[in-house]
Length: 388
Ligand code: UFG
Image (cartoon, rainbow, N blue to C red):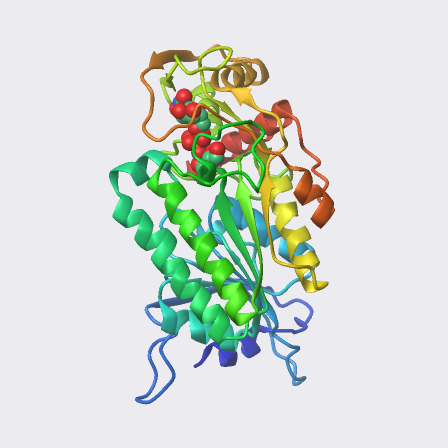
């Protein structure tokens, strides 16, 4: 069975009255010598199976979301489904979860660097746009494992971009990062300011930006590069949220500590040149970040020119201010220790964010640290019930 055979077998249908939908997983194995590159090792479709009608399937024109089972990617998939898009997810499930993907969405388990798999997926699902989230994202880990970060974030992205070009994909939206700016000379930092990453993570993303720009010029693929600042919070409807075990991000760590999942937390560095000595970051609600992607897709589809845009609110909070907010919203005065600086941390990074607003018409709805923390706490409580 090929992907399209299968997709046709599950695409538009009417379920007879009384017949219950069920979720099943299918694995499509290598078929016949001389066949197109295989979709193995694992192709799972997390989809509702319904009884077929005889009508021809509608066009499969799809948006491919890499890393769609992860934290930000799964929010994106929910938003795309909400707006009626056909979505296919490619995820290796290294940090993502099948349950984070809405029912009815195809999940292909594999690597973005698997060119045979990706090319076939693009062809058979008629992928017209790619939103590329899949990446390793922990700054200190990139310092200890730079080659792993360059492989996963840079080498695999190169392969994905090549597949996109060969497969005639029209739009490409790339998750880049504020880490490309390193320790900026001024804040807020603008898209035109110097890019001088101070971690392999930032360098690995910057190299992908460069590849995408060059491929855009040479091959005509239209792109929006979104440089994320510090993403936090959860789906206001609590369908998904930050669920990775052993997470390192500040708001996640703080809400876990507030809920007793950790005995205490550390503040990494209290001697930075900031008003309270702790690092300052621009925390953006994940739902607003996802909205920037949706706006970017609409913009590109309407013929907008390729662009590189910051995604932040334009104001920052220190580590101590974030911790105080989590204590206030949760009502728990948890233990906080002062610790030394963490490798790769810039003192202060805040976005100049007017370009995304002007170009995409992006209008954030959750620009409020207390709201971000409230949603993060609500998700953390729900996660406790899901995982127990
Ligand atoms: N921090 C602590 N204690 C913790 C966790 C974090 O003090 O337990 C501090 C960090 O040292 C840093 C700040 O909180 O000063 C924010 O750290 P995060 O790990 O939450 O986020 P980073 O700023 O390191 O990185 C994040 C994303 C990157 C992105 C960057 C942009 O992971 O992808 O924000 O600023 F590039």
